Length: 198
Image (cartoon, rainbow, N blue to C red):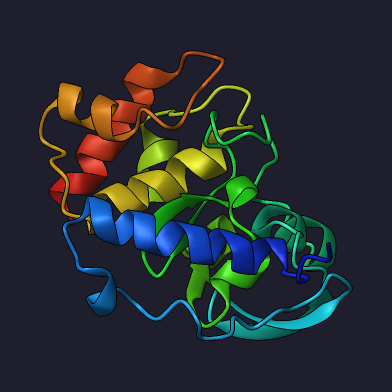
């Protein structure tokens, strides 16, 4: 007996949509159409257009390439650090449409059509972003490896209008960024200072 060939992606969509619809209490006839063909891209290099720090770059990338690797290895933006490469340390934090994301867990193709901001896009040595200036004035770093991710995450925290008036809130909202040197008191101080002027 021959079975019809079906791609893994199509199988998952066909199996998942009715299940999700049923669990959400949606009648299957009102469920989203599962029959719409999904665009298949790859597995070889495909053109990927990324808007990084206000500048558009078109790269030929395999769909499995992470945003972190595209930034560091293809665009030379090494300010975004590769730490754990598992989404637990936050060293690779960038802003995508103003939201904090771990670039090591984000595929580059997922960032197409969105605005990506890295540490290089926040300020320059001649004109620091207020958060960069606050980290400097508060001595919010030791070895400095996690600092770009800390600063980008802190900028995201402020722009998300999270509370920056008390230390416990700052620590909670920055919990995705780990500093192995333990410079947390100075990092919190920097964010509190910058938050006051936001």
